Image 1 (tube, helix red, strand yellow):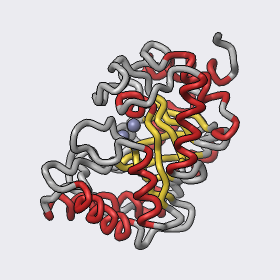
Image 2 (image 1 turned 90 degrees about the horizontal axis):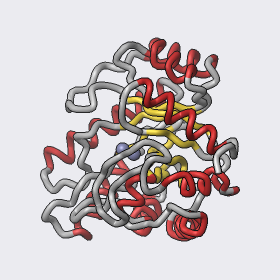
Image 3 (image 1 turned 45 degrees about the vertical axis):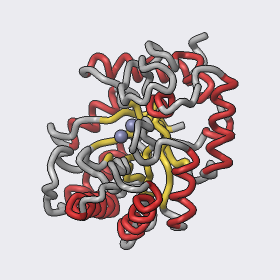
Image 4 (image 1 turned 90 degrees about the vertical axis):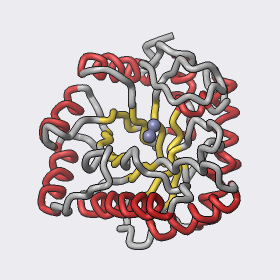
Amino acid sequence: MELGLHVDTSRGYDAAIAHAQRLGCTAMQFFSGNPKTYRVDPIDAPALERFRDARLAAGIARSVIHTSYLINLASDDPKIAKNSLRLVRNDVAVAGAGGVDFVNTHLGSYGKRDRDEGFAAVVLLLEQALDNIEPGVSLVLENSAGAGALCGGTLEELGKFVRAVGHPQLGVCLDTAHSWAAGYPIDSREGVERFVALAGEQIGLDRVKMFHFNDTQVPLGGNKDRHWHIGEGLIGFAGFRALAAHDELRDKTAILETPGEDADDARNMATIRMIFEGALT
Ligand SMILES: [Zn+2]
Ligand SMILES: [Zn+2]
């Protein structure tokens, strides 16, 4: 797998690349703008091209834009749905201009609306989001922790989106902390084998483009989105070792979204790299 972490680009692209490179990343994820506003900045194509070249020169083979936290494609408020679509389309355009492989987005919450009606509305928005997507970019839907009206909490529902939209550049991102919180026991080899087999059946492993590797202390099926340091939560070394060792996941990308500061990033990257090297038992 290509391994990396979510990096802060607020100090500039070069600083973000240097940080990722120092930690041995071959992948990185970032926000294209401020993740807490609906405002979008004009696309600076030359800067994005320089960013792409600098990433590749630093050995960072895969890159991901995480869309804004404000996005709620499942909302029954037309204004929120429209603004969410605008943000996703902007990130898809930024990815095209900057040679970014994946645009990872949350789907949001159905709120009080009927789930089937909400599902159909999300399908229409995803079709529009994929309208002008450049070759080489995939839009990937991240699984949610599955609480109440949240959209995309099961492998089955994500698979239904992939089939209903039917676009070759639509994929899925499986966040390990969200999967655990949604009730998938991925803390053992058997659990991971069952989970990956189910993802293959429900979604198709070719559509599972990437993972978010986060440990968590939320109880299994607890439906809470809380990330924790790799190996220090309930998924633990056994869960990540099984994911690392899985033959069918070798060409995937995995991004850490673990909490804390630079020192925590360094420790978490070192831990996951050791797990991949088989150095931990
Ligand atoms: Zn996310
Ligand atoms: Zn995530």
